[in-house]
Length: 253
Image 1 (cartoon, rainbow, N blue to C red):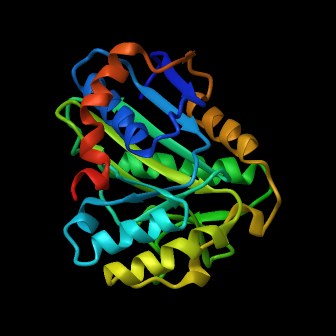
Image 2 (image 1 turned 30 degrees about the vertical axis):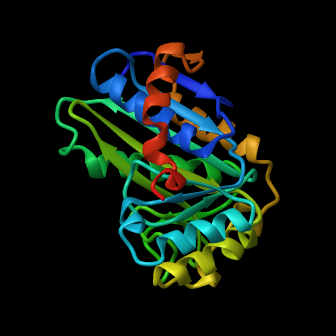
């Protein structure tokens, strides 16, 4: 955070969920090592189920992965905490990676910043949203964003490195039913509770294009700061490919 240039990577998803996860992990590693500056990744993913580390250790994980695959979703194990979440083409996937000397000290501030940016982005479309955990929401979190006081539209998780932190998550712009259709049986397999009526999308209030939401969300981060559009460089991609097997649940079988 600050006045230094913000590196922005948009539309640079590989189409392979474990590799996309590994790219974000590689960016976190390289920002922590001082090789890359503060970086914001924003894009529209394919059909992905991202499992948390706790899911891997839960009875029923193999069944849950099978449910994802049978339903046409690409499974991955994400680097942040939390439980299984769903991405699809009408969601906005983001990862904000910042260098910091004390990653633990700023955890809540970073979560709050991201949530506030989502609320502000939705407000620009005339949509009222609020921050807070809903009872029985999927992948519950204190910094979830919901609309109508009842339906979750954004969730996030955070991973800390030695000298950097990364807040990653998604904004569900449309097709909330797509999330529930695969997440309900997956949560059943994992023995987790969720109320499908708590799953929402921005389109529940207003039919908005996901690219438009991504663009406005990105502008919230710039806020007059210098920034530069960039791509995933070859060094980062090479490092990501070494991490990729760690994030493919099929490699754990």
